[in-house]
Length: 369
Image (tube, rainbow, N blue to C red; front, side, top):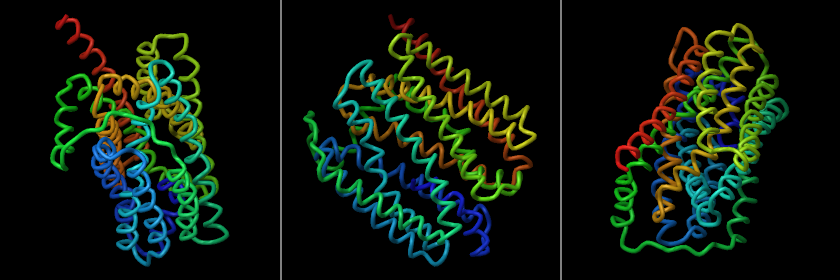
């Protein structure tokens, strides 16, 4: 909701303050950069002090950030407020997979991660519609006021949350941060973590460029844009739900490889078929569908390579995914001859890198054994 709800407002904010697309996209890019950085702080903190106190502090900061965004009077105030928002939002994002690791094992964890993958896209599906309605009847500032209300409900959830038992780490701040070195020395974890952080780069390019493509290139209204954007969120949801069904009776590795090939082929479709709004939306839907299939399995596979420092491993995994996404969102903001072609090219790279990592790790295991 922190990003997708105000995407329809980006052209409005850009015109109102007389700024460039690159400047207004800073409120997206810096959000993701700080969001990613603070996940690295929250992960070890939760391993030492517990999940609940970290969530209480983080979600509280997020509510404050929402209110500051609503009070913004220029792009730099908004960017600063978005940084506060990001600092708080990182707590929940860093700990979601750690909690899944704390509470579930094996196929059950894969299914839970898939269910999370079904639930999470509801926000980007609904968020642009809510944002565009507020633009039409209220103003863009109400978007952040709505986020503050919703976050307050999440804050109540953190207070009511019963924390699971797990083995906590010891030592000071330096010792906590040093746990990342322990995690990174795990070759399989490091390989998969950074390789699979590339899988979403086509989607992140779409995320930052979609308003410009649909509104300026294809001439849609903010309301029409929100519907097309929500269509992609359905792709994530259907993909994750499909994964939850398939992982019970089929090989997880086979499903993962097929989904990565699907990302590549749908990205090729974007390059070849995107002459109209519908011929762009269809292969983009397929790209998000296959990413949705892959994420629960790949996250489970990566977390399965570690037994301790789960908070740090979960935070680093999510951080790598979003920091790569932030770089891509700034990249897509530049004046490319065709943002659509750039998204297709990014999608091809995003599918090939993790696919190659699977073969490399399999070969390494064979040599070691």
